[in-house]
Length: 195
Image (cartoon, rainbow, N blue to C red; front, top):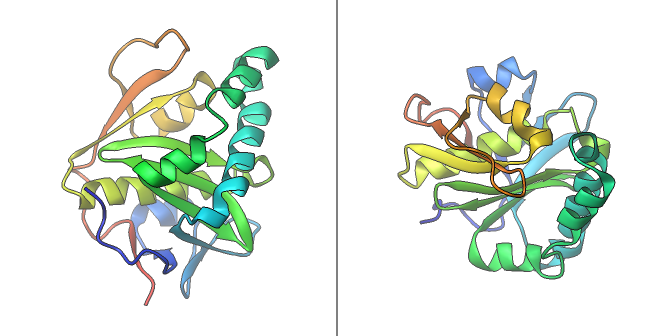
Protein backbone atom coordinates (compact mmCIF):
# COMPACT_ATOMS: atom_id res chain seq x y z
CA UNK A 1 0.00 0.00 0.00
CA UNK A 2 1.14 3.52 -0.63
CA UNK A 3 0.22 6.85 0.87
CA UNK A 4 -2.37 8.61 -1.28
CA UNK A 5 -0.38 11.79 -1.86
CA UNK A 6 0.36 13.65 -5.10
CA UNK A 7 3.57 12.26 -6.58
CA UNK A 8 5.47 15.41 -7.49
CA UNK A 9 4.25 18.04 -5.06
CA UNK A 10 6.52 19.02 -2.18
CA UNK A 11 5.39 18.14 1.32
CA UNK A 12 5.91 19.95 4.56
CA UNK A 13 5.89 18.99 8.16
CA UNK A 14 2.84 19.95 10.15
CA UNK A 15 3.40 21.25 13.66
CA UNK A 16 3.62 18.46 16.21
CA UNK A 17 5.08 18.10 19.70
CA UNK A 18 7.75 15.76 18.28
CA UNK A 19 8.93 18.22 15.64
CA UNK A 20 8.81 21.17 18.02
CA UNK A 21 10.93 19.17 20.47
CA UNK A 22 13.46 18.61 17.66
CA UNK A 23 13.67 22.37 17.11
CA UNK A 24 12.21 22.22 13.59
CA UNK A 25 10.20 25.42 13.06
CA UNK A 26 7.60 25.17 10.32
CA UNK A 27 7.71 27.73 7.50
CA UNK A 28 5.40 28.05 4.46
CA UNK A 29 5.71 24.83 2.47
CA UNK A 30 8.75 23.40 4.25
CA UNK A 31 10.66 23.07 7.46
CA UNK A 32 13.64 25.11 8.58
CA UNK A 33 16.32 22.84 10.03
CA UNK A 34 19.01 23.90 12.45
CA UNK A 35 21.42 26.18 10.60
CA UNK A 36 19.87 25.65 7.18
CA UNK A 37 17.68 26.89 4.41
CA UNK A 38 14.13 25.73 3.90
CA UNK A 39 13.91 21.95 3.38
CA UNK A 40 11.14 20.17 1.50
CA UNK A 41 10.32 16.49 1.18
CA UNK A 42 9.09 15.18 -2.16
CA UNK A 43 8.77 11.87 -3.97
CA UNK A 44 12.00 10.74 -5.65
CA UNK A 45 12.21 10.99 -9.43
CA UNK A 46 14.42 9.16 -11.93
CA UNK A 47 16.61 12.27 -12.19
CA UNK A 48 17.47 11.88 -8.46
CA UNK A 49 19.03 8.43 -8.85
CA UNK A 50 22.68 9.50 -9.07
CA UNK A 51 22.41 12.01 -6.22
CA UNK A 52 20.70 9.49 -3.93
CA UNK A 53 23.28 6.80 -4.70
CA UNK A 54 26.02 9.31 -3.87
CA UNK A 55 24.34 10.26 -0.58
CA UNK A 56 24.08 6.56 0.35
CA UNK A 57 27.73 5.87 -0.38
CA UNK A 58 29.06 8.99 1.36
CA UNK A 59 26.84 8.44 4.41
CA UNK A 60 27.98 4.85 4.83
CA UNK A 61 31.67 5.67 4.45
CA UNK A 62 31.60 8.77 6.67
CA UNK A 63 29.17 7.73 9.38
CA UNK A 64 29.52 3.93 9.71
CA UNK A 65 33.29 3.73 10.10
CA UNK A 66 33.36 4.44 13.84
CA UNK A 67 31.15 1.37 14.39
CA UNK A 68 32.85 -0.87 11.81
CA UNK A 69 36.11 -1.12 9.92
CA UNK A 70 36.72 0.89 6.77
CA UNK A 71 36.74 -2.38 4.79
CA UNK A 72 33.36 -3.41 6.21
CA UNK A 73 31.90 0.02 5.39
CA UNK A 74 33.31 -0.14 1.86
CA UNK A 75 31.74 -3.59 1.41
CA UNK A 76 28.37 -2.30 2.59
CA UNK A 77 28.59 0.78 0.37
CA UNK A 78 29.34 -1.26 -2.74
CA UNK A 79 26.96 -4.17 -2.03
CA UNK A 80 24.08 -3.84 -4.48
CA UNK A 81 25.11 -0.27 -5.27
CA UNK A 82 24.78 -0.55 -9.05
CA UNK A 83 20.98 -0.47 -9.07
CA UNK A 84 20.12 -0.03 -5.39
CA UNK A 85 18.38 3.35 -5.73
CA UNK A 86 16.68 2.61 -9.08
CA UNK A 87 15.28 -0.64 -7.66
CA UNK A 88 14.06 1.16 -4.53
CA UNK A 89 12.24 3.79 -6.62
CA UNK A 90 10.68 1.09 -8.83
CA UNK A 91 9.53 -1.18 -6.04
CA UNK A 92 8.87 1.07 -3.03
CA UNK A 93 8.09 4.63 -1.97
CA UNK A 94 11.21 6.80 -1.90
CA UNK A 95 11.09 10.34 -0.53
CA UNK A 96 13.84 12.94 -0.88
CA UNK A 97 14.75 15.79 1.46
CA UNK A 98 15.67 18.76 -0.71
CA UNK A 99 17.40 21.95 0.31
CA UNK A 100 18.29 23.34 -3.11
CA UNK A 101 19.65 19.85 -3.89
CA UNK A 102 18.96 16.40 -2.45
CA UNK A 103 20.38 16.10 1.09
CA UNK A 104 18.79 12.85 2.26
CA UNK A 105 16.30 10.14 1.41
CA UNK A 106 14.10 7.49 2.93
CA UNK A 107 12.65 4.31 1.42
CA UNK A 108 9.38 2.84 2.70
CA UNK A 109 8.28 -0.71 1.90
CA UNK A 110 4.84 -1.27 3.40
CA UNK A 111 5.46 -1.22 7.19
CA UNK A 112 9.24 -1.08 6.87
CA UNK A 113 11.71 1.78 6.73
CA UNK A 114 13.95 0.05 4.21
CA UNK A 115 16.61 2.79 3.99
CA UNK A 116 17.38 6.17 5.51
CA UNK A 117 20.48 8.10 4.43
CA UNK A 118 21.54 11.71 5.00
CA UNK A 119 24.42 13.51 3.36
CA UNK A 120 27.28 13.65 5.91
CA UNK A 121 27.49 17.43 5.47
CA UNK A 122 23.89 17.65 6.73
CA UNK A 123 24.07 15.15 9.60
CA UNK A 124 22.94 16.25 13.06
CA UNK A 125 20.68 18.98 11.66
CA UNK A 126 17.36 17.13 11.90
CA UNK A 127 17.18 15.89 8.29
CA UNK A 128 17.11 12.22 9.31
CA UNK A 129 14.55 12.88 12.03
CA UNK A 130 12.29 14.72 9.57
CA UNK A 131 12.59 11.89 7.04
CA UNK A 132 11.97 9.24 9.71
CA UNK A 133 8.87 11.09 10.94
CA UNK A 134 7.67 11.33 7.34
CA UNK A 135 8.22 7.59 6.80
CA UNK A 136 6.41 6.68 10.03
CA UNK A 137 3.48 8.87 9.03
CA UNK A 138 3.33 7.20 5.60
CA UNK A 139 3.41 3.77 7.24
CA UNK A 140 0.65 4.69 9.68
CA UNK A 141 -1.42 6.28 6.87
CA UNK A 142 -1.19 2.98 4.98
CA UNK A 143 -2.95 1.23 7.87
CA UNK A 144 0.00 -0.27 9.74
CA UNK A 145 0.32 0.16 13.51
CA UNK A 146 3.98 -0.85 13.74
CA UNK A 147 7.04 0.37 11.85
CA UNK A 148 9.93 -2.03 11.31
CA UNK A 149 13.53 -1.54 10.22
CA UNK A 150 17.01 -3.02 10.43
CA UNK A 151 19.62 -0.75 11.98
CA UNK A 152 23.36 -0.82 11.49
CA UNK A 153 25.38 -0.61 14.69
CA UNK A 154 26.30 3.05 14.05
CA UNK A 155 22.61 4.10 13.87
CA UNK A 156 21.26 1.88 16.65
CA UNK A 157 21.28 4.54 19.38
CA UNK A 158 19.62 7.02 16.99
CA UNK A 159 16.63 4.69 16.48
CA UNK A 160 16.44 3.65 20.15
CA UNK A 161 16.20 7.36 21.13
CA UNK A 162 13.28 7.68 18.70
CA UNK A 163 11.21 4.96 20.33
CA UNK A 164 12.29 1.85 18.43
CA UNK A 165 12.82 -1.38 20.34
CA UNK A 166 15.06 -4.33 19.55
CA UNK A 167 13.03 -7.34 18.46
CA UNK A 168 15.76 -9.90 17.86
CA UNK A 169 19.51 -10.42 17.71
CA UNK A 170 21.74 -8.77 15.13
CA UNK A 171 22.10 -10.69 11.87
CA UNK A 172 25.41 -11.88 10.39
CA UNK A 173 26.02 -8.39 8.92
CA UNK A 174 25.44 -6.74 12.31
CA UNK A 175 21.99 -5.30 11.45
CA UNK A 176 19.59 -5.11 14.41
CA UNK A 177 15.85 -5.75 13.80
CA UNK A 178 13.81 -2.96 15.41
CA UNK A 179 10.15 -2.04 15.68
CA UNK A 180 8.11 0.92 16.90
CA UNK A 181 4.45 1.03 17.93
CA UNK A 182 2.82 3.77 15.85
CA UNK A 183 -0.63 3.42 17.41
CA UNK A 184 0.27 5.95 20.11
CA UNK A 185 1.06 8.64 17.48
CA UNK A 186 -1.99 10.71 16.55
CA UNK A 187 -2.93 11.14 12.87
CA UNK A 188 -2.42 14.91 13.08
CA UNK A 189 1.29 14.46 13.77
CA UNK A 190 3.64 14.15 10.83
CA UNK A 191 3.34 15.16 7.21
CA UNK A 192 0.63 16.65 5.07
CA UNK A 193 0.73 17.76 1.43
CA UNK A 194 1.74 21.37 0.81
CA UNK A 195 -1.17 23.47 -0.37
